[in-house]
Amino acid sequence: MYKNKKIIVVLPAYNAAKTLEKTVNDLPDMVDETILVDDFSRDDTVEVAKRLGLTISEHEKNSGYGANQKTCYRLALEKGADIVVMIHPDYQYDPKLVKPFAEFLSEDYFDVMLGTRIRSRREALEGGMPRYKYYFNRMLTIFENFVTGYNLSEWHTGMRAYKREVLETIDWQKNSDDFVFDSQVLFQIVAKKYKIGEIPAPVRYFKEASSINFWRSFKYGLGTVWLGVKYFFGFIK
Image (cartoon, rainbow, N blue to C red; front, side, top):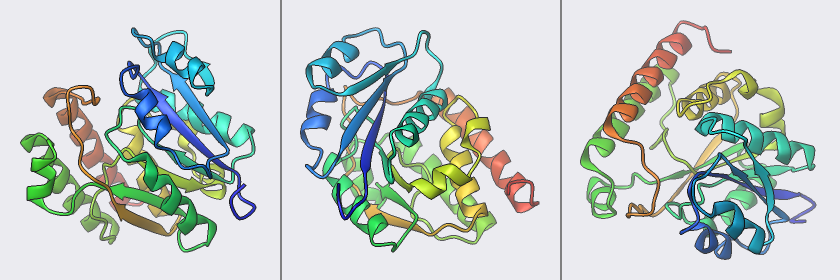
């Protein structure tokens, strides 16, 4: 327990066997439990997770990124988490950031924490972020900030931390099972007026890191724009 808060890390996994151990090894000691949800991987992700002593849940079929997170959050809440940190097990995000995430939330500075990869264009591109992803990220973030009145540096990070209250309040169970789940959750958080904090996160794109292709990114972008329109006109509450 960290300051009387139970901290659970959730890992939505799909074909993460090559990077899972590095991710887990870098998690800080303050983490009380690590839950891996495997979305019907075709590699040895589950076997590696068993060797590392993680709590494991396996989907019987590939259900999607959003569906994976739904299982992650349901299990974390069932196990009594006060703070839930979601991090991709592909080592694209730095697990050491779990500590400052938990500190900011446990001290009630914020209700939600995001790991932002966008500190400068040079750093993002030199870290391996594909150019089209960088510009999509920038354009969508500018649009989302405009319709919400927020000024977040990145809306599309895969490293996030939530207070229990947040996950008990927003209706994430009805969100998409696909990648747009992340955007839906943030719009719901903004609609509930929760406090959002950000911490800079190093940009790590490499061969083993997960990444969706151009057309899935485009579909995700269109879905996010539609959510922004719905928020602007008061349909997300």
